[in-house]
Image 1: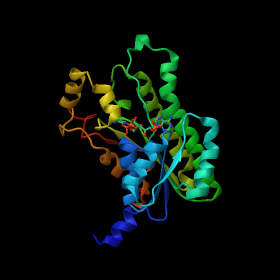
Image 2: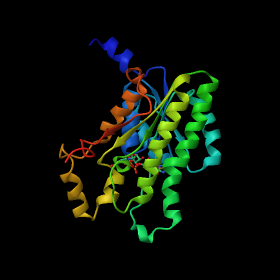
Image 3: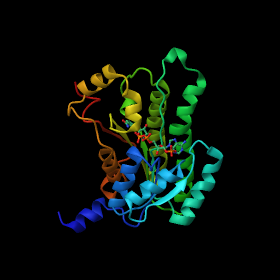
Image 4: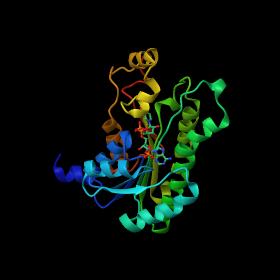
Length: 258
Ligand code: NDP
């Protein structure tokens, strides 16, 4: 394949992309892959220093924007400010995430809410703002949510997380049906076990859990953040123009293998 065909098919030049939680882990890798594919990338999160350090590493004019996705009332203004500074957001990757490992019997509603607020409510409102502008400008767009393999398998102790990721899959189905005819595709990527902070938080000090995880991944390796990054770049690209309402598992076969 010639470089021309590759860039027409998989390239993102001329597009502005926003990655929430883009300052670290999987989000930073997603931002890197989108930038390498030619997009103008903006990364967002709560910690300015983390964002600045990541943007310097990503290079290619990567922009930063400090926001807390749980501050729902502030999101419309944040989206407008990003669009004014960097251009209309053509590609949104709802990646920001948190987790909590706690026995179900000890959880109260706030334990579920603090996870749901980030993964679902924040991502929903930001998507709504981005979609509204795309519709008003009659521009095509691509929204991707970072789901999780946890939406497909039962895992103990991370109930707020499992509930949130399962809800995201429903959001993807609904939005993908509502906006496809107007040029906006909505998909998701469901990472398996990826070697990042969130994974270490869930497995550190729990050797049996880690062993159980490793024993069920057919590739016998943890995923790397860029494995998710390239899946997002593909879903955001012209090559995926007929892919809508899907969640791609990027998990080494963990959810389906034995
Ligand atoms: P990290 O903890 O490394 O990164 C999470 C990012 O989200 C941080 O950059 C953080 O930045 C940002 N963030 C958290 N809360 C908020 C908030 N309220 N507002 C804005 N940004 C926020 O996690 P990962 O990179 O591992 O996870 C990224 C995504 O991938 C998550 O959605 C996670 O659920 C999902 N995932 C991860 C898996 C894994 O094995 N690692 C497996 C399956 C899914 P800051 O603190 O500065 O705000």
